[in-house]
Length: 119
Image (cartoon, rainbow, N blue to C red; front, side, top):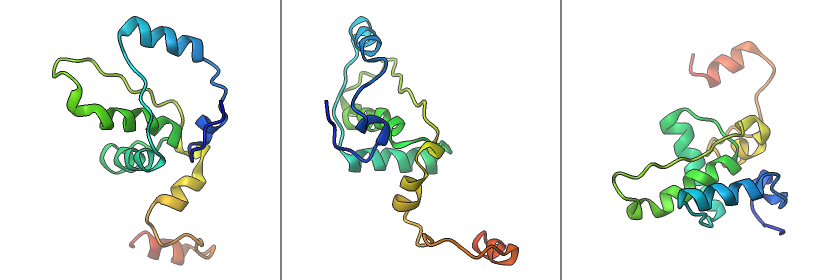
């Protein structure tokens, strides 16, 4: 397996608990669905903006999968999206895909930091 994705934890391509994941999927009647990088980034942004969750892109992939099939999920279904990785595991994604134009950083000065924070 050699996946091409911005989600670095998925790109490794050798899931440590693959057999356990397969077993849980089969016993629960769940499913795995592929998602694109754009779908991962969309879920990543939704989790941050709407839920206050800063996760790594690989974790956002589970939510991206749910968003992709949400119209096919029965109303009474129990859905679990596992988010195990903190966004600090891949901070470059936050910087590159945040939509914030302040990507070069700011001077090491408390007054400049306060300006950026809106104070």
